[in-house]
Length: 198
Image (cartoon, rainbow, N blue to C red; front, side, top):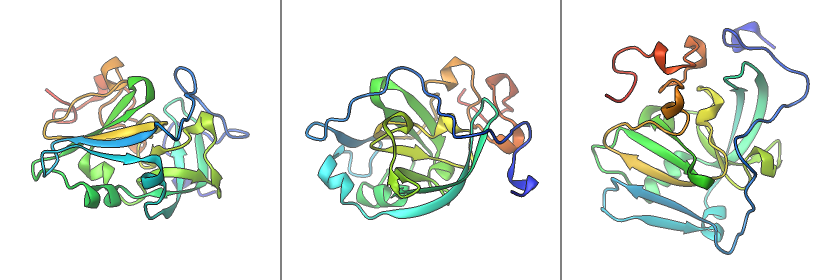
């Protein structure tokens, strides 16, 4: 592994630790859906059933994964649905600059549109050629590998298009609004002007 791939303050652990907040939800394919709402171009919400979402075109990403607790998992092979596919199916209003990713139990994380659409961002359904395990986010998690991993929300159920930025679950609890591991943006007190909502 090249040292340049490891952000400052991070280390590579033995094994593959997994961390999550709260219990692991049970997947019920008959009632599961994926919603896109908020400032859509049409003004309407869209809902994908599990069969509809599962049938969307998939792409692969090879990426490292950096947890704010300071471990990094290197060279993960993710496969899933590109955010570009969702944006094409349900276009946002021209004024949308941010999204909120919503998950089971009301968990959320906000992303700038530029991070949501960045190369490597993915609604992942597989890890290393196998379905993601339940404790890692089955059936769908977003992966945003260039940001700290709390932005890579597990058990995703919706995307909300936002005209104005709004803090998500951990951001409301003192984590940095942007979460760039190369700049060690761990906590909100480190935010520069313009990096968070007013």
